[in-house]
Amino acid sequence: MVRLTCVMLLLGLGAPPVAEAYDLEITNNGPITTGAQATVQATLSVKNESVTSDVYHFNWIYAPLILIEKSEQGFNSVINVTGEFPGTFPVSVWVTHRNCWLCRPVARNVTVLQITEFITGNLTIAQIEDSEVVTWGSSSSTGTVTRISFSLHDPSHYFKSASFVYNWDFGDGVYQITKEPFVYCNCSSMGNRTVHLKVVAEWEQIGSIIHEREIMQKTGDFTTALELLDAVKSINIVGSRETHVMENLNLSLHINGTPPLALCWLIKSECIPLEGDKCHLVEISGSCYNLSHTFRDAGQYCLSIRVENGVTMLQTYHGIKVWPTGIHPAFLVLVCIALVSVMLLLVLYTTFRSNTQQKDLVEVADFDFSPLSDEHLSNHSESGCGPLCCRSCFLQSSKEAARESHELRHSFYKPVKMYTQ
Ligand SMILES: *[C@@H]1O[C@H](CO)[C@@H](O)[C@H](O)[C@H]1NC(C)=O
Ligand SMILES: *[C@@H]1O[C@H](CO)[C@@H](O)[C@H](O)[C@H]1NC(C)=O
Ligand SMILES: *[C@@H]1O[C@H](CO)[C@@H](O)[C@H](O)[C@H]1NC(C)=O
Ligand SMILES: *[C@@H]1O[C@H](CO)[C@@H](O)[C@H](O)[C@H]1NC(C)=O
Ligand SMILES: *[C@@H]1O[C@H](CO)[C@@H](O)[C@H](O)[C@H]1NC(C)=O
Ligand SMILES: *[C@@H]1O[C@H](CO)[C@@H](O)[C@H](O)[C@H]1NC(C)=O
Ligand SMILES: *[C@@H]1O[C@H](CO)[C@@H](O)[C@H](O)[C@H]1NC(C)=O
Ligand SMILES: *[C@@H]1O[C@H](CO)[C@@H](O)[C@H](O)[C@H]1NC(C)=O
Image 1 (cartoon, rainbow, N blue to C red):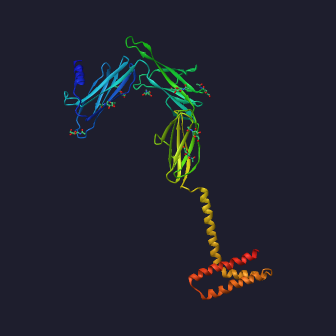
Image 2: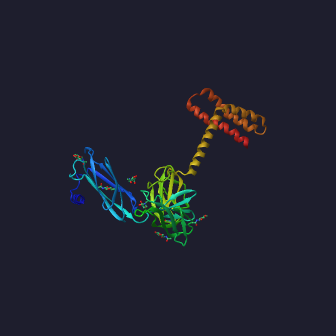
Image 3: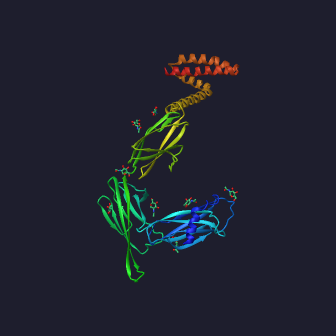
């Protein structure tokens, strides 16, 4: 006892530990029920690499808790403690160099252990949809089956021989008693309600005084607020799938689900599943959101959207084609048609040019048989072929060739015109 107070004095009045070269982390696995055991663990870590590794000693203060076991290994120390009375108990630890008991502690820390006379545990709510379980705090969606389950917190297996009975109160006049630590709630009406659970644990124990069997009992009361919301059922995107560079694209998002909704959107070249907050997050209290975006570069884009309302999460994608400024798809089609026709004309022209002489002859031959157009045709073929033959014989310059081709075309078109008349 004397040593304890000394130690406390040392802890309270002692100068701060040498530099901040050490970290001492301390954790406990509480809360526990009276009579059960809790484990408190302390880990020392050396921050300054230049501190030579040493042998350390862990000193604990846990009174009025009862020590069950203590172990120390290198930079770790673990104690198991138990308590007969409920309350909150601080457990402290400080570390000294082993060979220097009176030296200043190199580090110290404290943790608070909760001990209650009741059963310890948690109520969790999970929503089951298409045999898929989604856990979402205390919110649940209507129309789907909700599983409310109790998880016992008993790290030292204090209740290993106990049998449990669970009394459920769904807050709407419905009660249920089960042997299993879970129930399925067909929550059909929207709104808030409080689910209450009373857990009773019973077990036999051999009395320590007269060694007769006695029935032990512990209880626990748990409540959880159940907020029934509508799941996000759909996201409707109204707006164009095409736009131009530096032009405002206005999209309207209509969401079918209970607000408040957390909407997150991202525009990238490909569709990606949105995770965390790597997108533009907006809180919306209605069911509609207007999104306006201006693109700087042309290309194919994808608008990825995620909507959450604390019950469900839904993702959707919307492809967007961005054209360079001033170019409209219809315009492109026109350009294509024009190009194709020019090509066609060129092909036709070159084909006919290389065969002109032969064709002219063929045509002449044709028209020779036709008695009606005989006069006209012969006139033209004469005026066209006369100088042409001479030129093709005597002139070879390229300039002349160009002019020649011009005349050639005339000589070719004229008979045709005549023919159709
Ligand atoms: C004390 O322990 C807690 C829990 O492990 C830790 O977060 C905290 O940093 C520690 N404090 C010091 C001074 O090491
Ligand atoms: C680490 O320790 C050495 C000597 O013990 C000291 O000189 C140095 O400043 C320390 N470094 C830090 C970052 O604390
Ligand atoms: C101390 O607690 C740990 C973890 O809870 C457990 O594994 C160990 O058996 C306990 N030791 C004793 C002596 O009860
Ligand atoms: C119960 O839930 C609370 C908050 O959600 C959490 O801090 C605590 O660790 C949980 N306890 C157990 C025994 O799971
Ligand atoms: C929920 O509905 C199912 C059938 O749809 C029924 O078997 C079950 O007992 C109901 N549960 C509750 C808690 O009302
Ligand atoms: C349910 O409770 C939350 C806060 O816990 C509140 O914001 C919400 O409006 C409540 N809903 C209804 C329908 O009462
Ligand atoms: C989009 O909305 C803005 C105003 O918010 C407007 O100036 C713009 O003309 C709209 N763009 C289109 C393509 O309707
Ligand atoms: C979205 O835009 C439409 C018209 O385009 C308008 O009627 C509506 O009020 C807008 N909504 C919001 C939330 O701004």
